[in-house]
Structures are given as structure tokens and as C-alpha cells.
Amino acid sequence: MSEGARNTRRFYGSSSSGAGGSGTGGASYRDGGGIGAARTSDVNTGILDENVLALVFRCINFDPKALCTVACVSRRLRAVAERVLWRELCVSRAPRMVASLTGAAAGVPGAAPAPPGRIVGGWPALAKLLLFCCGAAAAAVPGHFTGVSRFSKTSGRSFLSRRCRGDLLYVSDPCEHAAPGSDDDVGAYRGVFRGFTRSRTRACLVGRQAALETRVRCPYCGARVWSMVAAGLVPRSACRRLGAYEGRLEYYVCVSGHLHGNCWLARLTSSDVDHDDGSDSDSDDSHVAS
Image (cartoon, rainbow, N blue to C red):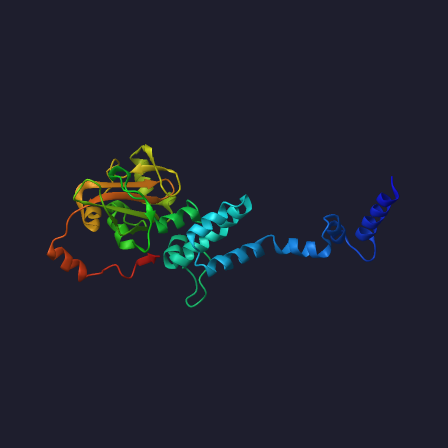
């Protein structure tokens, strides 16, 4: 062994066991960066790193396109995005809706709201649902990002059969599109259940032995879906709520509780317009995601 190698071994041994060093210090010198490297390593691990990323994205209002780009950089950043950043995006865009879906609103009056818990289907899927209209493939209407979307519990009740009215469902206002080759417009809508695995809607689907669709997947989480039309669980109030033609509505729910569908919108008369302008019965339970 050369003299230089012996000196190097003596240096590492004294730094790890001598009076002036510790086990941590020896490891840091072996890494080649000294004490400063050890401190930097501590700062860049765990929740501190996640807090820094959350602060950066809060400054840019959790821009979804920037968040998607960062999540593609590495597995570690993708994990942080799925665990923290997508959740923070949902909370910043629709705080009351997220609190209601996760049960975070419950607590002492006047106290700080509890942090949101887990959500079925994952936070990336909920973020996409808040900001993305899936369009209507059957009518050649592509999906797109939306500017502002309003989700309402009152609209959700219109999509529940009478025996399932105890479930909590948020449904968006229909996003209107001009259908190619038709004079009528297509409305695309989406929504989400709270606690779908324990909901009466799922119990009805299972009890009726409704088959999962083979050609349709949830556009938000990729899970398999049930056709509520095929299962006979679409109430007439859904068409009335959407302003759609009877029988010209598609309505799917995935195993994670995400809802999506489309309908052919009926043309409003002048009396219908006056009625819509004069009432807003669900203003207290509507939640805007922008």
C-alpha cells in the first residue's frame, strides 16, 4: 500500500472516531463534501424539500402545465407532485369542494381548517377533473382545459336515483360545444362522488350486477366504468337539469367515483331564458374551480 493511501485511511479513521469528529462527519468527508455537504443533504430531503416546491408553485398559482413538466423530470419529483403538489393545486382552486370531499371541513368552529386527507382515485385525477373537459368522442368533440367550471351538489342530486339521494355528488355545469355536422350543441359534464366505495350508487350497481364497459375508460384516472344508462340509474331530473333532450344523454361512473358524460342540448325558448336568469337556487352549495 502506498504512503498516500495509508495517510488517507488514517485521516478517515481519525475523522470518524477522534475527538474532533463523529460518525456523521466521517461519512460526510467520504462523500467528498465535508460538513456543508451533510447539511445540504439534510435540507434537500423529506418534507422541507416538498415545502420549498409548494412555495414555488404557489407563487405561480399552481400552473398545471408547469406542474406536469416538473413531474416528468424525475421519479422523485413525480412522487412529490403526486403526494403534495397536485393536492395543493386542488385546495387552491376549489377549497370548499375539497374540504367537503375529504371531510376536512369538520372541526371546531373558528379553528383553522384541517388538512385534506386522502381521496379515492388520487389527487392528480381530481386536479384533472377540476380543470379539464373530456369532450365527447361520439360527437367528435375533443377535450380541452377549461377557464372556469362550477360544480354543484344540487346538480349532483339531479343525477342520483331516488334510492341513492343520500350520496354526495358534485357535477359541473355542461361545457357547451358546437357539434360538427349538426345544428345542435353538445354539452360535456363531469363530477365526483364522496366516498364512492361506500355509496348507495355503487351498492345499486353491484346489486344489479351491472357490467363494466369494455370500450370506455375514465378520462381522469383510467379506471373501468359503468354505464349508468345501461344500468337504468339515470333519473329524468338529469336531463332537465342539463337542459338536454330526453334519451340523448351518456353518463358513466368509474370504480373510483369519477363521473363523466355528454348530452345533446335542447334549444332554450325565451321563457326558459327568463326563468334561468331569475333563479339560482344552488348558489350556496356551488363551488367554482378556475
